[in-house]
Structure formats: C-alpha cells, structure tokens
Image (tube, rainbow, N blue to C red; front, side, top):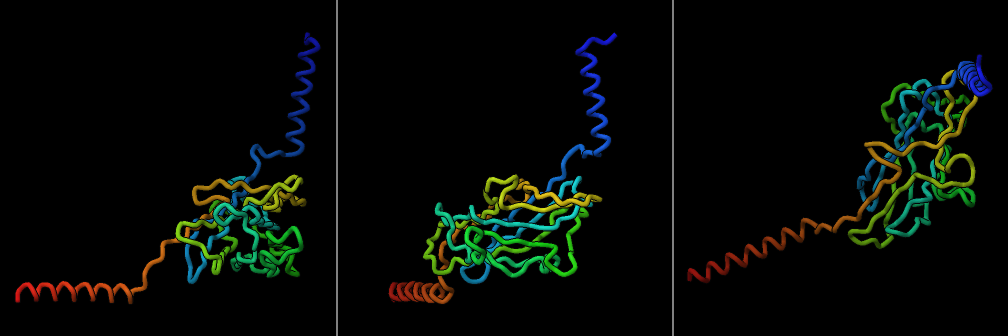
Length: 234
C-alpha cells in the first residue's frame, strides 16, 4: 500500500508525462546563432563585416520572420560610437525586400543604433525557412572611418549584442515561428560560433609609403653607391 508521499510522487509523475505528451515539447529548444565575420578592409577608409545567421538542428523547418539588429555597443577605441550613420547595411538578395532602406543613424530618437528586417514588409510576405545548419549571410555592415583622424593601432569594434531594455529579449533579436506553429516567438540569438562572434574588430594599419617615393629613394641610394665605388677605383 502506498504511503502519502509515494502517492503524491506518483501523481506528479503522471501529470508531468501527460503535460509533455499533450504539448509535444521539444527536448531541446531550437537555437539561432548570429555573428559578425572578421573585418576586412575595403577601398578608401572603410572596412566591412558580414552579418551571419545559423540554425541548430532543432531549428530546421522553422521560419524566420523578423530580424532586429542593434549596434549600440560598438566602439572606437574605448569610446562608445555616437555617429551610427557611419555604418551602412546592405542586405543580401534574399533579404533585400525585408529592408525598407532605413539605415543606422536615421531611426527615431532612442532607436538610431537599430535597423529592422521584416518579412511582412513586401505585399506578399516572404519569410525565410531554415533548411540546414549551415550559416547564411543576411547582409554586410560597412564602416566609414574617414575624417576621424585615427592613428595606426587604433581600433574600431562593430558589436551586434544589443542591450537589455527591460523586456524578455535584447534589442538584437529574431522573430521565429516553429515548424507547423501559428505563433511567432521573439528570441535572443546565441553569439557563439567558431566563425565569429557578436564583435568584429578592425585595427588601423600602419601607413604604407607610395610606390613612387620608394622607387625614387632606392634609385638615389643606388646612384650614391655607384658614385662611391667609381671614386675608389679612380
């Protein structure tokens, strides 16, 4: 005969099992990873980094409907970035219609550091289905540091971590709808990837002399050596 404690434990176990069967709970929640690729220099005083996403195996079949990106944590050396308009976002073709063209620095007060990609922006919504665990590019962030007077060794850090604004998610977040579900959930992406992280750091390189002066200097030195040898022989 079961005592009071055994009976309670049995009832709780039965209720938990029934709840799991009824709601078809996933053993592990789906994870979407967001990261920036290592920075690369481009023409002029600019560098760029790609915004990448990747889904876990449990996310295959799920649908991404919205991406909110916040670069508020970005810095120049140790100072917080204040002119967000120095960063331009260019969406990849499959996300181009999600972007209304609003760039960093042009949002309403308090949201200047953010951009939104919305699959419901087109007249016919075009959500993105995750079909593999391979990472995919959402777009490219290009930073223009012209006129800032930076010196060799100075650093610029693009950071997409966003901030905690008191809600359930950070300001960099993703709206995802599970396969077969009707409701969309706003989630915080993970930022751990062997290919990058929430940060992309660019270091100002040491200036390289123009080829012209180098050739002139080499020719001058060569001429001086020839003259010295000629004098010694004479």
